Amino acid sequence: MTEVSIEKLTKDYGQGPAVNSISIRIAEGEFISLLGPSGCGKTTTLKMIAGFEDATEGAIRFDGRDVVHVPVEKRDIGMVFQNYALFPHMTVEKNLAFGLEMRKTPKDEIRTRIARVLDMVQLTGYSERYPRQLSGGQQQRVALARALVIEPKILLLDEPLANLDAKLREEMRVFIRDLQRRVGITTVYVTHDQAEAMTMSDRVVVMFGGRIAQIGTPSDIYERPANLEVAEFVGQVNIVRGKVGNRIVSTAFGDIPVSGDHAAGTELMLALRPEAVELLPVSSGADGVPAKVLSSYYSGSLVDYRLELAGGATVSVQTFPRTRFADGDQVLVHAPADRFWPLGSAA
Amino acid sequence: MNVPAKKRFGPLLLIAPAALLIGVFLVLPYLNIVLMSFRMPGQGTPYGPGFTFGNYGKFFSDFFYISQVINTLWIGFLTTFICLVLGYPVAWQLARGASAFRAVGYALVLSPLLVGIVIRSYGWTILLGNNGIINRTLTGWGIIDGPLPLMYNALGIIIALVHVFLPFMILPIMSAIQGIDPSLEAAARSLGASKVTSFRRITLPLSLPGIQAGCILVFVLSLSAYVTPSLIGGLRVKTMAVTVVDALIDTFQWPFGSALALMLSVTGAIIVVIFGRLTVMKWKA
Image (tube, rainbow over all chains, first blue to last red):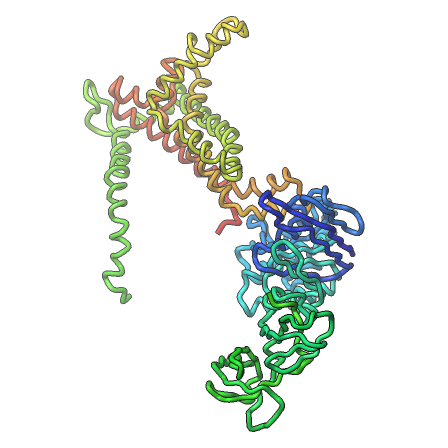
């Protein structure tokens, strides 16, 4: 198992840095996702770790050894590409044998290792097939097997699920995560899909414009976003503005206690996730802010409401569809004070 | 079968113009050549009355003609091989090289086709002749004592044929390489293959369809080339195509000329089929 340490890594193609001095320490066996919109530098970072792109500055260490000047083929990485990149002129077996042949593994060991990895990805019996004779999900698993069979130091995945349909994508998430845990390999996973990053990773690195916006566990990122950009990129969020008082912020939902130094009198933004809010009928007489239902969208497990508060501000709320409200209904909005998260001063 | 007439005849209707063209201008003339090859030689006429196997008998009994077919095939093989060796790197550069090079490279590759075949062949005689530019320059510099035999031999024919047929090798290989996903090479590298190994194990085998197409094109074109071999080979080296025309026009033996032409076509076709069998790609759908 390998610990990967990225230090002040920069890539500049000549039009300003695509990756701007980022540092990440990845523990042995850790599953890390690089998450961000396209052009945020996540793929460039992965390519630098793999060795397909030269770093303009900075270091990449595998177990303390700087690999920046080591060519791709000597870095001992396993990589899964977005389009799988299976060799179309080779059978599954030949695809899997390729990396082992490069390592001059003895023939009988190649055979046993291929059999083992095929079993691992549940494709025993497919070794004589050509890639075109496999479904997308099967090709995906062969690509994974090909990267793992060489028992590399680290596993790199570049949006591997982007070409699969929704149902298969969810299955593969679980599959890849389970496999990675069993093998215990240090893994870097690039994706623009926040749900993918959240469900699979030990930690998520959120990137914008070549910089790291936040590194944290999925719950850190979701519940305690570092800033407005992160909060908005990872799931839906309501931004509630309020005036800072003495360790409180006065908002449409009442006074919310906040910790930390926020200058009194400034305007502060608070994040409030739509599912953190409870909707109650006015008749309940419960503690809540009155609001009117503008619209609602039923999606089976959840209902999405757009509400207008008495002050004119709108909020999105997600609830279980046990009690349904119709458009135009008056409701009470109950948002627990501890579900607000300060994002910083409003610009 | 309850397929409506419209649906049944639709596809036929679409094929009809091409089928008509091929039928009238290719199949019928070919049948005519086959028929002609069995006719009796005439006295003062292109052919005489009645039919015979004699024309083929003459071909197989005279080693001169068989050796000429072998010569022609050799020129075809060598031209094809040299085109492949010279053309592949160019095709690779055009497919994968810097975009600045690509536009210029493409124009350069096509340039031999922009000059008429007669002019191009005469151009080569100016270069290759005993008193030609190459020999005069080399003699002038004192590198050689007498002129090198560059013309009126197979070498001259091959040089000129390679020049014309290079684009037919380069273009199919180029499009085959362009069709190869670059991430395949990246995958090979990630698995531990050097750049050279990844080319040898991935890019080269995947460009085989282009190599196959290019080789067949160049080989067939070389066998049937007439103007270049007749101008550069002169009277001393004759390819089969030249001999066929000699028989048809100079000695006025239409039946024998037809037999010769068919023997060349048949040997060429057999070689192309064998080549296709040898280079069959199991991985392709």
